[in-house]
Every structure is written in C-alpha cells, then in structure tokens.
Amino acid sequence: MKRLLLATLLTVSPLTWALDQAGTQRLSDLQQRWAAIQYQLPKAQRADALEKLAADATEFSHQYPGSPEPLIWEGIIESSWAGATGGLGALGKVKAAKASLEQAMQLDPNALQGSAYTSLGTLYDQVPGWPIGFGDADKADALLRKALEINPTGIDSNYFWADHLYRQKRYPEAIAALNKALQAPPRPGRELADQGRRADIDALLKTIKAKQD
Image 1 (cartoon, helix red, strand yellow):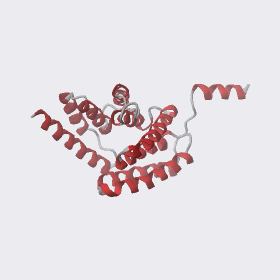
Image 2 (image 1 turned 60 degrees about the vertical axis):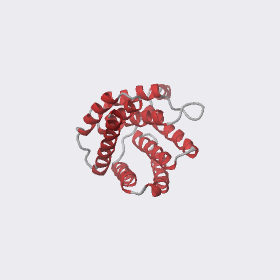
Image 3 (image 1 turned 180 degrees about the vertical axis):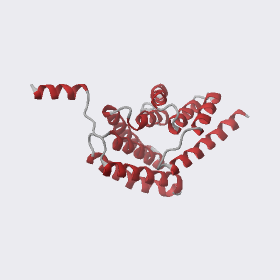
Image 4 (image 1 turned 30 degrees about the horizontal axis):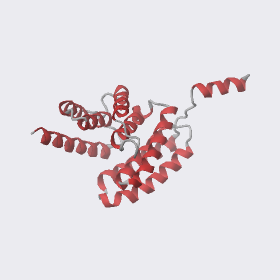
C-alpha cells in the first residue's frame, strides 16, 4: 500500500528538493560567473568561457537532480553559450537549454520567481522557427506573460517581455515595459547582473526611439 501511494504521488507531482547551503553557494557562484562573462568579458572570449561554465552547470544539476534551480541555470548558461557561438552550431545548445528549462518547470514552475518561463519564452522568441528550429512567437508570448504573472516587478521578466514587444513592433508598450524594468528592486548578490541588464535596457530604449524618429 505504501509503495502504491508513493508511486501515485510521483505520477501526480514530481518531488522537489531544496538546495542545501553548499548548493545555494554554488548557485550564487554560477550566477556571478555568468554575469562576469556576459557583461565584462570581450565577445570573442565568451564562447569558450561559457562552454566551461556550461559543463560546471551540468555537473551541478546532476549533483542536485531533484532541484529546479540548477536546471534553470543550466538552461540559461546553455542559451548564452548558444548566443555566443551563433550559427547552426548553436541549435543543439538551444535544444539542450530548452530541455533543461522544461525539466525545471516540471519540478517547480515557480522556482527562482518563474525564471524558467522567462528563459524559455526568450528562447521561443529568438530561435528560428520550423524547419530550422522551434521558435514560435505565440508560445513566447504565453510563456513571457506567465513569467510576469509570477514576477511582475522583476528586471528580467519585464526586460524580456519588452524585447518580445519590440520584436512585434509594439513600441509604446515595449517602452513602458522597459521603464518598469528600470524600477525593479535590486537583487542582493547580483549587482553586476543588475548593472548589465540596465545597460541592455538603455540600449533597447535607444533602438526603439531611433525607429520611432
């Protein structure tokens, strides 16, 4: 009977496990290393650095198989690695990122304030559509809206929603979302990421305003 009950619970809702102190520190280390690569390293050096970071992220997610946070950051890093690599060689990496993020959502869709929705929505927005890739603007829209439901004031959730609106040429709405992103509360321990994202916001605002002139 106990075995049957456990099997039933597993089919209804996958078990998730919180990170221990060592896991939390390792997650913070990954986040900080990613920000340093993304915002401080020259573009020509990013692909190699992200390849090494992706290997560390994969090891981390294997060490904590029931925790969604390592999978989310595995997906984020794989996505960034794909972006730094570019070309057809990036497709395998974005598919791996998609799988990591979907697995994280199965464990806990609300983990890290819905970051899996933000990251997966961004992938659907930026990856080419069929037959090359899996890009889909409608799926991106739904995922990014869900991310905003979970984290309505977040800098990333609002920035990537604004980027989606920009791609749809909905410029006034995009500007409003970017201004909201600029009002996002700071993230303790992620000062470099916040600084870099604000630079991304400023750049997109300039791009939109240039198109409107």
